[in-house]
Length: 122
Length: 108
Image 1 (cartoon, rainbow over the protein chains, first blue to last red):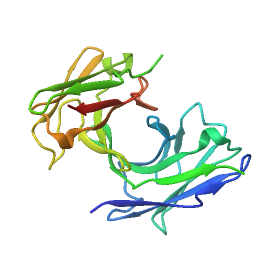
Image 2 (cartoon, rainbow over the protein chains, first blue to last red):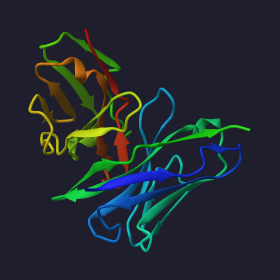
Image 3 (cartoon, rainbow over the protein chains, first blue to last red):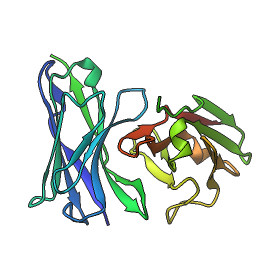
Image 4 (cartoon, rainbow over the protein chains, first blue to last red):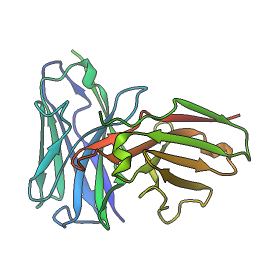
């Protein structure tokens, strides 16, 4: 059974860097036809796609966040990670990691982590 | 621009049918997924490729598509269906991902 679990600091200072890791179990991040994805949800608001990474290290980021986002993958630990720099209060959100898989030519977000609350505050 | 537009809220009585629309230019080229999110929980995939249901998802949840609009339907709404629902698709290029703003379904 595929499971994803986010981990990382719950509090980040303004202008600092948000760092989260997603540990995957039940499937290898090395396998093809999977994108490893980050999505966030500010309090009381909707879902925002941050970006995804392929096991080769290839990435695509939301253009609105691209200048501040870096994603990486660690196949030996079966993990992938998110870094968001120069954070402000507007980056306060629940951050979800998720898997996107190829369903016969359509990419479908099918598994989600439980979410990690990150607050930006001094 | 590539946006997905949903109504903010829908209210429905138990046993009735709830319909949520999602509109956007990207939907002319891309298929949509629908997610249910209950308070404090992660979203759950209910519909993918406009009309397909993952295993274990009740048949009362269904989807349809026409042009640049997709519709999510809950037939025979139950109290437990009260939640936020989001449509999602790739953008027109297929590179980036879009989410609708979400629709809160209230069971009266």
